[in-house]
Image (cartoon, rainbow, N blue to C red):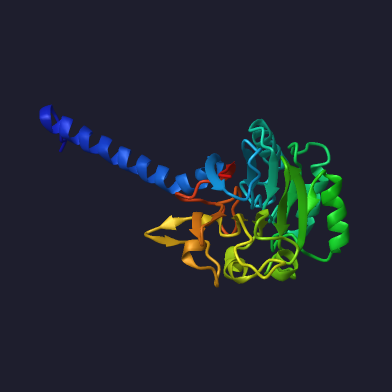
Length: 296
């Protein structure tokens, strides 16, 4: 027995088949999308004001980037890192700050900075870096410092660095990582004054409460004017209101984005790499271009 489908019945059959194909393609796209989002690098532009910045400074442009995780797919090759370097240099920042976790392993971090000898970040006020939990291994800190400096970058491991900007100094305070390092907030706060313009950097935002409670060399709180952090990847994947990449001990408000506490802007970056799984979902990789304006 033969069955022939003709007329509107044939059209209805073809229509249902077309809908099924479209639904299957949409499902494939939905499943693939989290693997594609890590490639959608964005530049997040932020403007903040400060009464501590010298009045003769028209503006200060800071490029901040963290969590490269070179060696973790899809950020496997240094070519992708070179693309980020070129992108940041094209923004013409006055200052470049790096927030840690440069590779998937300590050996990878050494290779990361060794490669930067050939193609460098460029900024008139210099490039400064803190370490993340993936950057410390069997290699001595002094050897790692040497490799970072050979790449034209100043390592900040419980260090404060001063830069002359306009008629006063700007200070960058870099705290060691709390997971695999030996952080000392008091070692940093004791070197600056509340009236100084201070940028505070640490890879892990879990240190924020301690920083907010610490005092400067004169016993005054509120010595930080801008805080920069990474580590969380912004949650990396936002799924049904939950976040995939969270670390115990980090408060929810310190997970991502710009958060103001005690009038201090605190930026927790999504970073640009991935860890755990090679996916992102509604947590785009990002470079930050922060413009600081003086209110004096």
